[in-house]
Length: 149
Image (cartoon, rainbow, N blue to C red; front, side, top):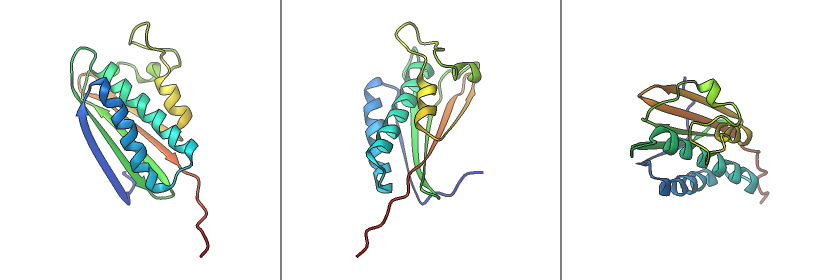
């Protein structure tokens, strides 16, 4: 069951590495309406960067495909970010979530999912071979004190 959002945005772009910084900045800009701390904003940007990079590098290793990022403002000051690709999929999600595991070659650290988990409160990964992967991240932001007038 999907949580009701008070505001949301979706963006779609080709799986080019040059679009990672756009997705990162756009998600952070949208999250800014929730008045996050600078640390929370950096956590969001880092997690989005890792998820989008995974979609680009692992979802479409030999081609250009579509990446979709959705950002939602949910109840209880929670931000939900979904990064979806329609690429090759992950054969073993549990193994892929292990630190240092990568299928991306020597230049990849294998820490993408570990980093996402460390910066977000919840991480859900669903993948179907030949159909793609969906990563859903949730972060509850610290409540802000409202200024007294």
